[in-house]
Length: 421
Image: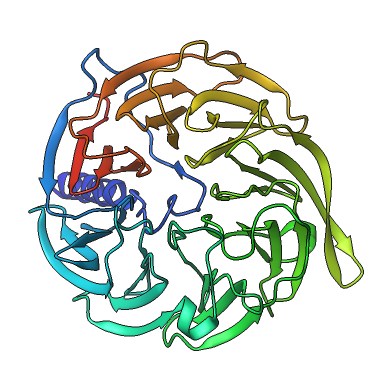
């Protein structure tokens, strides 16, 4: 009997550990801000009609926002009833728990994916309203406005789109002002910790914030925030907001959108719209600062990422290539060599990407999902299906959590079972 009790206890411990092992997806592009999920045991091929659809829910409003998942709660943003909101949903019942008002609506809706950290939720409205609310009940804690409080601006007229990130006790964001291109705020009070002024780094692009979200790197031995603003890629020292370096050549005159991809002392950057392109930068110490040197530059016809993002796996980048195309491509990071391109892409329009368990998930603008093996050996399509809903351009980035694929499409959210049986 004692042995049975010990065995039963051990089994229960293993079950609890397995349950606890599912990491949250607490912000834009996941727990490590790189679009990658640590989950395993997922389907390596899809049936002809795609994986099983578990459920669909409606009522989220207009928006291209993706979702964040912490515990059994899902968070997103949307426009409805002439207002913009951060929303919290119970995943078991799929009932809305609360809706926190952010600001005025915006045509085709929200862009930001909420960040959930330490019991707080952060969301950025398209008019520049940055709001912090309690995760428990949606009660507002503090708010700022990029234009009114910082004199901020966007590089073009499509509205603020970044997903602000937390780093320790700070919330990092991109107001886009001349004296506050990037700012660090106390994440609990909203008080300004520091502001980074934007110097002249070149004539390409436009002044103001871009559409990318900030990533963190320790390149050249300096903790820094890297992003792409209206004039190109920049690096800002995390400790005090000192401007470290800028790279103008990758900017375009319409919208600089994809997040930068850090890797050790290197950063890969790309923008679209025909006059962007891509580049690998080498960051190194330069006196009290950091300098960025171009390792190579890829012309737009060779590679440009529109707005679906890129995935770095080992020494290779996987992404959609082309303005409004999303053609699957694999690039060798250190050389910029195009290793392979899809001869016939499974979907059309820009492709939003996520990676899990050896595969890249491509979501094309026309609501076509594709599963592509993440290997530099060759392009291997492992399945495709038409998403069950299409309310507009299918742009929201896919999220993988607890063996499920979550796809937001404006007012609707669908959930597919992608676990191996």
